[in-house]
Length: 300
Length: 142
Image (cartoon, rainbow over all chains, first blue to last red; front, side, top):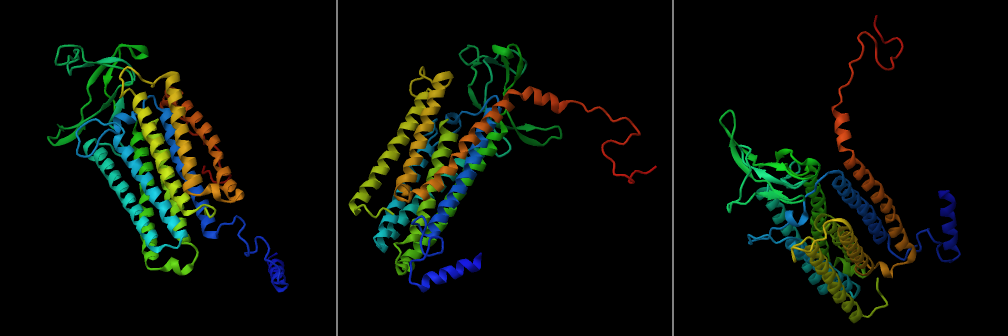
C-alpha cells in the first residue's frame, strides 16, 4: 500500500500535476495540521469535562438532598456578608474579558502586528492570573473557613420540616421565645468546635444540633443535623480543580508564546502568527468549559 | 480565519461579543437570584414546573453562550463545513450520555433503601467440608 501511494505521488509530481488530496499537498479542511489537531484535542477534552459534569448530575440525582449553590457560594473578599453568586459572576466576567483580549491578539497576529499580539496576549495572561487568584480565594474560604474537603461536606439541607431540640431533648426556643423551627430544603452550614476527647486531648468536631421532624414520612423522628453529601466536596474540588489546572497550563503556554512572539519567532514564519491562533482556540475552550461549570455548579 | 472581514468589522465583532456574553451572564445571574428567592422572598422557582422552566432557561442561555464562543471567538463559523461537522457531530453523543447517566442516578436515588438492605444482608455460611465453586481437577487435597 505504502509503496504504491509513494510511487503515485512521485508520478504526480513528475508530471507536474497538483498533488492529490490526502497526499500531503492539500489541507483537506483548509486548516493546518496543528490547528486541526488542536480542534480534535479540544473535542476529547470536552468529553472528559462532560464526563465529570454528567457524573456530578448523576450523583446529585442519587442523593435525597444536595447543597444549594447560592447558599454555599456566597462569600466575597473583604466583605462579611452573604452575597450569593456575586463572586463567581466576577470570575466569569474575568474569563470573558480574557477571551475577548485573546480574540484581539489573534486578529493582530493575522495583520502581522507584533506589538499588538504581545499587548493583547499580555492582557489575556493578566485575566488568566486574576481568575486563578479568585479561585484560590474561593478554595481557601471553603477549606479553611468552612471546613469543606474532598472527604467531608458540612453544607447540609433539611429533608423535612421540623423543630430544633436542646441537648436534653426539650424544644429549643429562639431568643425572642418563639419555637426554633426549620423548613424542608432549608440549608445550614455545620461549624467545627474543639471538643474534649476521652483521653483528655482536644479535637475539632462538628456541632450538630438535635432536631425533630414534624411533617411527612419523617414526622416524629428525632435526629441531628447531618453533614451534606460527601460527593459534593469531592466533585467540586475535582472538577473546578481540573478546570483551574487548564487555566494554569493555559497561562503558562500563553506566556511562552507571548515571549516567542515578542522575540520575532512567529514573524519569521510568515504564517499570520498561527501559533497564537492555536493557543487562542485552547484559551476560548477554557472559557467554554467554564460556561458549563458555572451552569452546573452555580446556577442549577 | 476571517479573511473576508475588514479589520474594523473584526474589532466591532469583538466588542459585540463582549456585550452579548456579558449581557447573557448578567441575565443568567439575575434570573438565578430571582428564582432562588433572593430578590423578592415570596417569589421562588425552586419546586415543580417553575423549577423545571428555570433549569431549561439556564441550560438554554449556556448553550447560546457556548455557540457564540465556538462560532465567533473560535471562528468555527468561518471554517470548512467538514471541519465543523467533524468537531460538532461527535458531541451529540453526549445527549445519550446525559439521558443514560441521569436515569441511572435517579434510579440509584430511588433504590437507596433497597441498596442499603442488600449491602447489610448477612451471607449464609457455606456448609462445612464441601468445596465451593469450580475446583480445578487434581488440586484438591484429600
